[in-house]
Image (cartoon, rainbow, N blue to C red; front, side, top):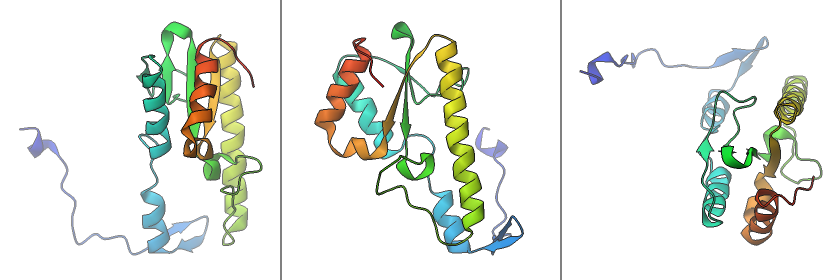
Length: 159
């Protein structure tokens, strides 16, 4: 019965291109961007495994908290966000590139992302939560990341 409730997609209604901010978007680019995950990304799963290996248990993506943190450790009143360097503009990181096409659109988008991140972090701290931001590039070397996570979760907080 459940499968009959699904809405079937009409194969003849293929998207041949999108229009965004008055400009046509290449269908290949649109398909590429549609594959970008907001949950369960590889960096996020690496952080989950490390936190779990440290002996901590957590909840994922609690929507009742500002910013929907990636990991929530309620007992420690701590949250962890795993940010992609590109989307969240990790300062000084080689992955923080800016597309050459539609530069004004990307500038506005990235500015809004950074402002929203800062707002959500302030809101969480105002509610008494400890907040840790883990950058995608930090997940490439798990040993220092594990040490940073252990320090954060044990209460030895640092910026």
